[in-house]
Image (cartoon, rainbow, N blue to C red; front, side, top):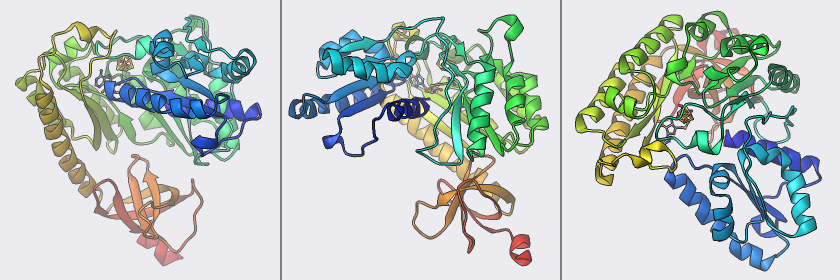
Length: 436
Ligand code: SAH
Ligand code: SF4
């Protein structure tokens, strides 16, 4: 989501005559887009913003803007702690950035723009394709979250759920596809709530929106993220049966395998309900690749609770997982819970989880060996070994040698020969080689 916000800010500034610079020392303005989801991200942001003080001393005309969740949350506090920052703007204010730049240049005084309104509407916006990969793009469908998982800061920093108008989303997708984009990922903190904030008569459910986006002619691949398991509906599962261009990947964050911890997290599903969702997805799409998010060391997590998370991962066998040590994020509710897990225990549990996940990922990769997959090319492999690199529908990275020349977004059929640490190795599909 932050990546998409950065793209929007860049485009708006370019439309107002600014040029992107890769050199901090000679730049006339610096925008720091921040994330506060975990304590570490916030510390990193503060230390980088602090390091800009020297630049400002050397060049008092330099405009420094801080955007994103840390800016939203800290507001005035940031201004006091970091007086060299000119503009502090929250996620709802990014569309005003060029005006805020103008205001700072005219008035030469700091601005804090962190208002959050329930009536906020995401402006109509046609993205430029000047930067980034030409074949795949993110499209925001909603902002904010109403779920209040007890550990999570998002509802406070990004505000309440605001869905984008369906017509704007479809216009953006059509514009991107007409400009050569072949893969779209729809973005929201909990995409299943899409439309819930809209008047009944205008409401479109997420599965319905997905069907309409999938039907845009020329769209080759469609993905979405993220989905809270409590809201995963049979109608969404049915999309995997019906929509040919919907990719075979589902990110379904479980957070914990213990019902006691899930309750304390206010996730509003049980392990049993989660497993039923996994079974439903696998029934709708046997080939589906599942990934997840896990938090270890949530306040009150016992050794048995952690073992329950390990047991769940053995049952589901995720293709990969993002795993985090719990971090206290005021004003999230869990800050008032007694933090019973020492940092050493958190570190140990995280390592146990990640080591086992690495093994399972390797085992899952082995299951792909011998299969023929359609790969969407991204470019040459970063390993610099002359291989092409692309992604399967499951979102797995696949590297292979080929005498052909490809452009990003081209499709190729390859047969998987080997599972590596973070990718699959493949060779050109034998059938194809014979026919060439
Ligand atoms: N909306 C998504 C999650 C977005 S945040 C969802 O509901 O699944 C991405 C991930 O960060 C979360 O899934 C969670 O695993 C992790 N996370 C959020 N707050 C955290 C915290 N306080 N400590 C550690 N990890 C956290
Ligand atoms: Fe945070 Fe929960 Fe909302 Fe995800 S669903 S953004 S974890 S409050």
